[in-house]
Amino acid sequence: MTTLADRVVVVTGAGRGLGRSYAEQFGRDGARVVVADVNGDGAEETAGHVRAAGGEALAVKVDVADEASAQAMAREAEQEYGRIDVLVNNAGIWGDLDRTPLLTMDPDYWDTVLAVNLKGPLLCTRAVAPAMQRQGWGRIINISSMGAYMPAGAYSVSKLGLNQLTFSLAKELGDHGITVNAVAPGTMDNEATHQQVPDAAFERLVSQNIVKRAGTADDIYGLLRYLAGDEAEWVTGQTFLVNGGFSTRF
Image 1 (cartoon, rainbow, N blue to C red):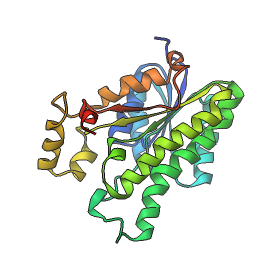
Image 2: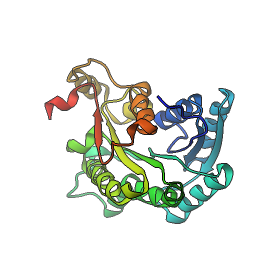
Image 3: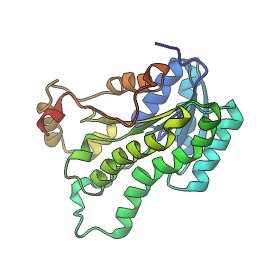
C-alpha cells in the first residue's frame, strides 16, 4: 500500500475512545494528524500520545455542530500543514438510544443528536472541501454504525441519514478527485459501548456475530487506512458494514 507519510488527516471526536485510537494509528503510519474534539484537553492528550510515539499532531478544539467552529478547525489545519488530505468524521453521540421513545422525546434532544451525528459531518466536510478541491485529491470517511439498521431512536435516524449523506456528498465531490465513504462498525468493545449497553445485552449482541467477539479499533482502522489511501480511488459512495458478520441477520 502507498504510504500515508506526510498526508494530513483530520480526525474529529479524537479526544478519547475509538477516535483517539484512530488518530494514534494514523500517526504511527506517518500521517500528520489533526486531533479535533469538543474537549480541548482530551484533544491535547491524544496529540501528546501521537507525538510520544514519534508522530506529528496538532490539537484543535471544535464543536462540529457549529459552522464557524468547523471552518476555524479547517483553517487552523491548513495554516499549520498547508493542506488537508483526509477527514474522518468520527465525532458523535449516542444519546439514550431507544430508551428515549421518538413519540415522547423532547424535540431539543432530537435536535442535539442530529446536530452532532448528521449536521456535524456535513459542516466539517464543507469546511475541508475547498482545500481538497484545490489539491484535486481528498478522502472523506464518515463513521456510521450498525445502529443505522436497528430501532434505536434518534441515534438510528442520524446514522442512517449519515449513510445517505455519504452517497450524496460522493456524487457532489467526485469530479474533484475526492471520495466519500462510510464505515459502520458493529458492537465494539470500548468504553462508550459499555456505558450505553447493559452487560447482558452486550453479550447477546456479540453472541449473534459470526465471529464470536466484539470489535476493536484495530478491526476498523485497517479499512480506514485503505479508504484514506490512493488504492481506494475507485471506491466512493459506499457504506461498509464491519460487524463480525452480525449484518447477515438483517
